[in-house]
Image (cartoon, rainbow, N blue to C red):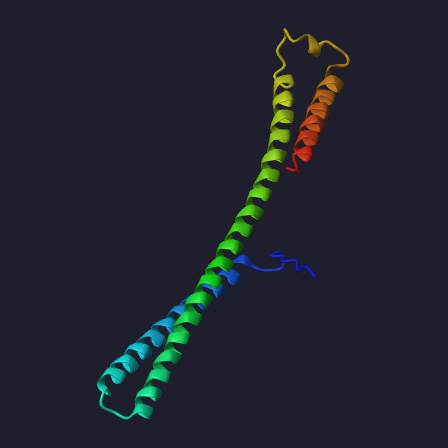
Length: 158
């Protein structure tokens, strides 16, 4: 079964804070494991004349810290991939929203331009004496807005 991942129910700031806190915790765990590994490596070097069981026990502890280091490194890489995906998704959502706002603004600017020209009331404009001048201006606005809305919807900007 496929899994659908949606970010719509999450608060971006809180989720990013949790992810960054987790990355910090992984860094602290890695640093602690690295210090423990170094300690057991020095202990292993110091026990060169000790019994085989003692050296094996210290070696097993050092190997345990090596495993913790490997796990924290792989978890940190996975977490970074999740962070990258999350931020890419948020960026994509923001771009989609901005495209919609831009499309709406373009439609409104064209209507405002037409209304502004017809609202200047110059005497040499033949449309001012024409009985259908007002419906023509409204029709031109509606037609241009409809054409732009169609183009933007076809390109999935609206």
